[in-house]
Length: 94
Image 1: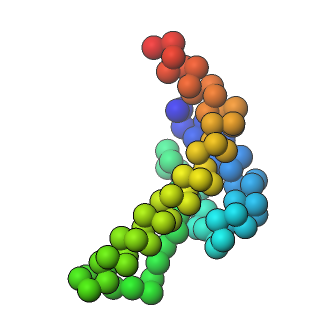
Image 2: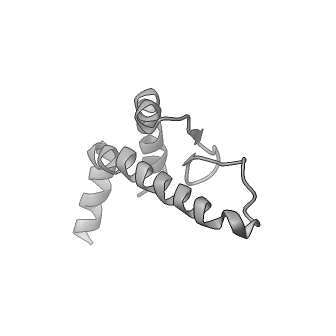
C-alpha cells in the first residue's frame, strides 16, 4: 500500500474512533506518526511487569484477547475502505 494510502486508511479509521473504542471497550492510542510511512493504533498495558515469570500466562492471555479484539475491530473495516480495495486491485495486477 503506498504511503499516502496508508495515511488515508489511518485517517478513515480514525473517523470511526468513537465507535471502534466503544466496541473495543477501552480507549486506544491513535498515532498517525507524521513523517513516517506507517501509523499505529495501539493498546498499552502498564500495570504489569513483563519480566515477572509468574505473570506470563496471564500476560499472554491478555495479549491474545486483545489481538482477537483488534482483528474483530479492524479486519472488515479495513477491507471496506477505498484505499484497501485499491491496494488489493494493484496486487491482483502484479
